[in-house]
Image (tube, rainbow, N blue to C red; front, side, top):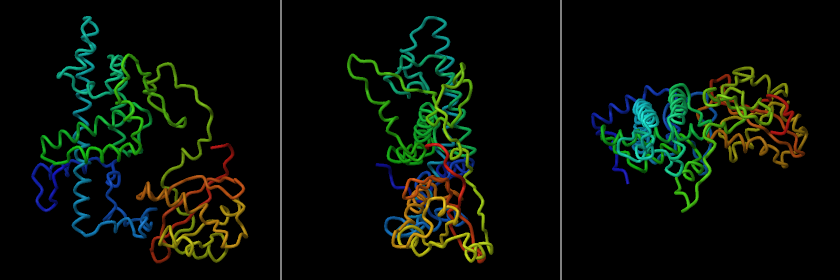
Length: 375
C-alpha cells in the first residue's frame, strides 16, 4: 500500500512534480478521480449531477482535508505522466537502435529483449516477444509519439491496442520514476489508478499480459487497427492503406464536445413560454439532476413522446443516458448520444450545459439530427 501523502508537508520533489504536471494541459484531473473545486464551477454537464447517494460530485468528500488530499494525489499522478514522456520515447529509440544493430549482425534479439539493457521493449507483453522486431518498434514509436501529443492536446482514450500499450508504458514508467527520483510515494495502488484513468477499460491489456499456455503460441493482437471504424491512425502504421471496414454513420463520432446552447440566457424563458422547450426539471430532480433541465420539443416529437402523460415516465428515455454521460465526462460542456423512443425511434441529441438569465447553471437536451442507419 502506498504511504500516506501529507498535502500540508510536501517534499520539494513532490512540489516539482506537481508543477511539472501543470504543463500537461490535455489531461484533466477528473481522469484520476478528482471531482472537486473550481474544475466543476463552470458551465459543464456534471456540475449539478447527483451521485448514487444524492450528493453533488463536488461534495463527495467527507471534509476539505479529504478533498485536498485527492487534489494533491491527482496532481502528482499527472506530473508523473508528464515526466514519463521523454523517458519512454527516448527508451524506445534506444531499443530500436539496439534491435536494428542486432538484426543486421545476426545477433540474438530475444536475449536483448529479456536483458537488463532493454529500456521499453521488455515492458511489452512477454507472450508476444517473437513479434518485437525493429520494424515493429518503429511503428510503436510513432504510436507513442501520438499518445504523447494527445496527452498534451486533449486525451480521449486509445485508438488502437498499440496506443493502449503505449499509454500503459507511460503510466508505469512515470510512477516508477516519480517514486524513485521525486519521492512521490505513489506506489502500485496509484499506478492502477493512473492506468484506469487513462484507459477506462483494461480487460484487453490484462489478457495480453497473461502467460501463454505451455506449448501453445498465442495469436497476436491487432496492434495498429482502429477499434472504432470512424477513427483514423497515422498512415505509416498501415503502409498498404487502412483496413477495410463497414461504412458507418459518422455523425455521432464527428460531433464536438462543445455544442453551443441553442437558447442561452433570457432566450430560455421565451423558448419555454412558446413551447420550443419543455421543462422536465421536476422529474429530473427526483433522481438525476438538481439544476433546471429542459428538452427541445423537436426531440420529444421525433421520438413519438408528444402528448404522453407524465406518469408514463418518458423522461427516463432521455435522462438516464444523459446522467451516465455526465458521470463519465463531468467537465464536458456537452455530451451527444442516441435517444430511443418507446417504439424504437432513434434521434441524435446532446445534453448541453449553459446558464439562464440569472447566470445560474441549466441543462438542455437538444435535437441534433435523425439517425438514418443502424448505429
